[in-house]
Length: 428
Length: 152
Ligand code: HEM
Ligand code: FES
Image 1 (spheres, each protein chain N blue to C red):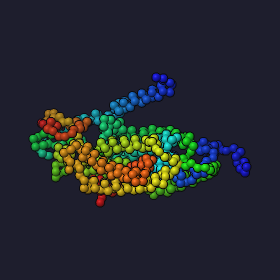
Image 2: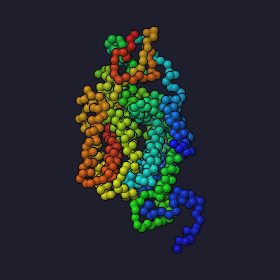
Image 3: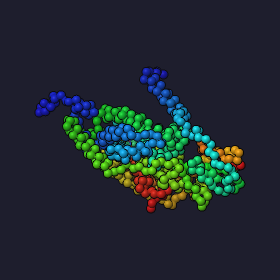
């Protein structure tokens, strides 16, 4: 044996620590960059960066209505590297939302969520929720107009949930409107409870990855195993350096926004939710709240949590898009749903005024059921076409459903973010 | 039914979590109540308000409307869609929301979506000819009717 010598070398304690996170030897296909794109690792790194910068910001931040805004100004103007650290925190948080989404897409389309990985998909979704929750709670802290009205709009959406909505919104805000009690709530969640939950869930998440035997790979005859140190470790260091370097450079030039101090007497026009929630806000513009805030979010959540557990006929764990038919359908259905959502929103905004035409019938029907069917029926017909004409089985059909949902959300988000101006009117 | 240790602990946890949830949702988290410490909002002498006119009270966060017949109605400035502050529309006598373009008539009822219910109202009391508006708890309503008016 040629490398007998290295086999017997006792690893240093640092190496031992790394080997607690990774196995000793690993399938060479698992560390190809286009298997995971390093997304999970980047998320872990971002968590560390956000924690360190966040803890630093905590030295100067004061969570009260009187002082919150001024303390951010103090960080910006009178603290050495203050604005840089704030930019770094802000930018990493944005990136974390984006990367979590990409990571979710990666594990889903590489069919890595079934059988022994099903449980970890659940933990992943919970982590995704935590990422959104920390961004959202952090959003309020600067106590500027952006923060105040974004949080007002979102907590108001919660009130539309039947029965518990009002008390849930009250619980979140600690009050009837967004005020000092809300600030304290959000501060505690943002800098205490959520980071703590992160650590717990991340540990479980990592452990379950290893328990499932590492990254999901297609079945094959011959496997080539390589040492984790240096093969994987080297790649991890490369990716981490690029991310850290990139973030540092951008943080020098990019300025984390800070508008005027929050003024509960004056809403800016337009008042938008945080960017990652804009898809949901867009939905509420077109659909009765009972659909927009209850039925659709609830069924979407059920659908995503259920994904690993539906009865599939032919899952090929670790195979991108499951099959070549799956790949074709995913690409086509996401494009079609993107265009379809776009057109539907355009005509809903400009031509279809169900609330006025059917002012006699209850609004749940005129602005709820009707637009809902207008969206679902054509898409259901589209899926039926694949089923009839191409013998697509349920694995591919469900994958197309997921693609349709994700791509519609992205489309709504982009419309709301880029194409809506004053009074949330379309700018074309 | 067999109850082993694990099941027992699991159930205890579920029961504890549910009790906690009920407590939290029944707003038993005591915080400084930023509202009830406030007093009634004194809007001034009732006869100083002209009929058929709208008076904005931005610090009290309400519009005081006096109708033809002398009845008063205090409507919250908060849009019932997602909570932005509505503006008075001097042409229609109603209200427009800057955020998603909801429109309300002079009674606060919805003229055009996305809002689904009329502007909330605040109870009014008239004591010694002075108008006292209770801005602590907005009252939700599904439509306007005459009983919501207060007369001097
Ligand atoms: C250990 C955990 C964390 C601590 C101690 C922390 C601390 C803080 C503090 C003190 C602020 C207020 C200063 C400011 O607004 O610039 C803040 C803001 C913020 N945080 Fe965090 N944070 C943590 C994690 C996170 C995470 C995981 C995210 C999202 C993925 C996040 C997103 C944000 C955002 C979006 C802001 C607003 C930034 C701005 O506009 O200035 N934070 N954080
Ligand atoms: S908040 Fe007024 S229309 Fe949306």
